[in-house]
Length: 272
Image 1: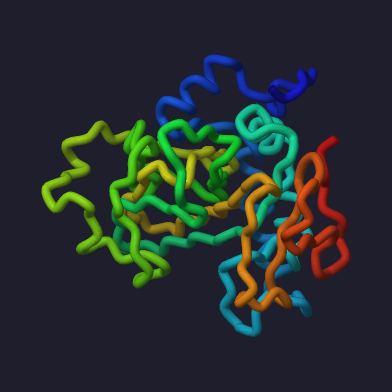
Image 2: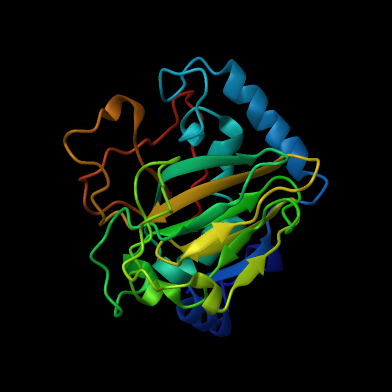
């Protein structure tokens, strides 16, 4: 359990919150930035992404791993408000292995139900400490109209085989283990976030998002965390543009490439 702190915003989770997370596979929302501050933080991050001389991939449009070359996102992945809560679920040793930017323009359709298993072979007895956790932070209003996330509570406890690699990493049309499985027959939680709030969820918790029917762009950042005991990248990956960042504790294993600093030399904010 994360240590206590005088600031309620950066405390670890209560026993009741941990129990809820283990039962449902997600928890939130939590406050990270003030609602008026969040768009300014994102604006600064966008400036850094455009001007960065050390982009993690050789492309003009990059939506992954920008915490490796942008100071603002380097800070974001190790914010105490996030890390203390992850410690309550994962223990002290935590690394961020990947980030994704999710922008949903006005009129963009929703994302279908999917269950991510980058590091499979989990069982019903698996705990959050042995699984991958996502932190999804809203940098703009993210209600139903703007395309908020949706979750099937408890769906992390079994595999639905609802993932494939086609559209943006996923193709949802013909992916069900059981062709009769209907997610609409399951309890569905629409998790609305204000700008500056975040939700924590297990990668294996089946999730989706609404269409953006508003007139404004929806912006979110998904940060992905695992224990350093997980071997993230295989030998076939070009590690010149990949790497993990410890946000808490220490790496006792040494089988992942670590960025002790990001590519611009900004030291990550390790929470002690």
